[in-house]
Length: 284
Ligand code: PAF
Image (cartoon, protein in one colour):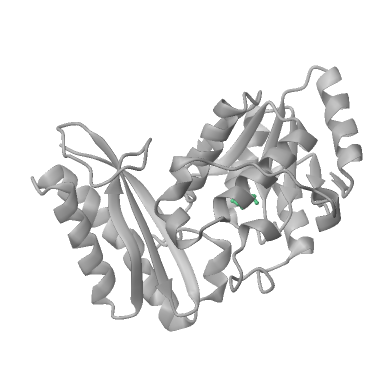
């Protein structure tokens, strides 16, 4: 496995691979890798001939006061995980490689970034779209893999790729969960034992929403209310949002139609940690 800091060197390796007829897959990450990331790389390994993983804690997607400085940096373990998952090349740029001092250009997402996470973390998605566009420019992938865990992020990236006519296919991979249902996240390691116990309520609330969508005739607003009740019952979670939204536009409240699809989206604060989770839901 090649580990490379310099964008130009990465581009050379990728272009070499493509000259040899290889399909190039990219898995962008911020490191602190867990089984969710491994599943993205393993899927890329199955579907592509040359797998590039990127590890970069992107400063521009953190708001002032967020966890940028304490975000876990575990490069050695991450590289082992990349090797075990079959990556061919890992791009580990320094900040100056991705953000020149005199840089002026950013990628601004539109409406999809103005709701939910976009309200709570204004500017976050512009940081994401800007860095992902740059990572695509360096790694020139045929296909890029993102987790459904960041549901809004993958929608915004899909929209960016369509709007900017980037020649990249976006694949969204299922959420990987702990045995009790907690969605894997690099931020789970911040949780105390008591918080870890309470965190299971997110997946429980989503499972209940899914059950109510098929087994009751409650409206999506009423189901959202039930999700909020479950989350609040632990007494530890501060609910930022818990809604059923349109899985393509993220609009809510959502009218209930038989056979219609929704995405249940949750964000909570648990002590000093923020957790998000989601599930695709179909109404009976
Ligand atoms: O999902 C992440 O880890 C990040 O937002 C991404 C896509 C790697 C951009 O920094």
